[in-house]
Image 1 (cartoon, rainbow, N blue to C red):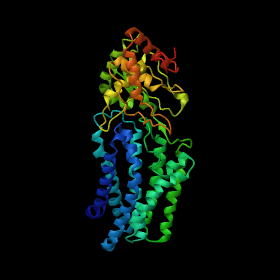
Image 2: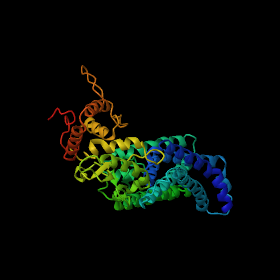
Image 3: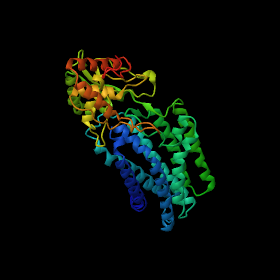
Image 4: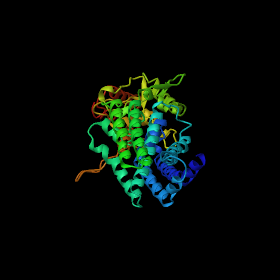
Length: 447
């Protein structure tokens, strides 16, 4: 049997696996900035590309079934002294095993990209990966089953199109998020926060359903009579029932991992803290954060520690405000897994004198806070890469960009005596801490 299996793997498993590996690896490489944060981000981004890999696996399975028929492999195996289900098991093992292995190999070839910086590996990552493997295997087996039932050259491309539309469109027609998550393994895998996760109960439910669907496809492949093939409805029904019982019915599309948001801090002072998911970047962040604290030391009652802002902003009730002793900063990860644009990070830490307007309902005056930070650093304000493009409406004069307006305020500050300039910067800092409007505080227009 091992010799026959090796023949099946070489003839029917390897070509499909190579295609899945190639498409998956290239797709992930092109969007490496989306998953460079860590292991959960990588697992979820790979799952999001099941919208391509599942239709591809469907097509591969159908194509292999057609190829098997053209090669008369079924007739060859029919002459061997083995039951039909054993012969089918060989094909299922070759095709499914190769497809599942290809999915894991995609993970293996991309993991080294972030291995040096990704320190946080929650157990839920393995659930996300397992569901992806099962989804690809189930898709390949469904393609194999349909390809045997409809052995036509058009079956493979037709299945790919139908599969792509189903993976994308089916969840959109469902109001409840838990149903949408069961309907497509790629649903809600797009990352909007570094702290996103997939709960273990959700992965368990998705895995149960995938096993049920894969079992049904295997029955269709192994059976020779329609009456036996009808039994394939049983594992599907059982999988639906069990998965619906396991998945939380209050499941939301975006779920956050509180452990990933926990702080990891330096042992020595001044203290610098980052979230656990970014723990591998603490050594990179620390010198820039301490440089900011050193520059801010010229202020009265300056901040004494720096901490990553771990707010998610989806629920205003959960937003944490930071005190006068803390410089809160956002941490951006580059596509190589390391800290992105350290100069911009330092500038942002100095904005508004190191005070954070996080949680302020009306936001803050960006040019004012930027000019205050520029005065502290002793350098002219520069454009922030995340600044929006500001355009004038019909008939309106061209507005100044944030950095241009900040530069004007900074020039006015430089012309003032240092004591007066410092007092105005301190006023901006206090306004930010108290969520008050800072407009006019630097140029004295609101005094």
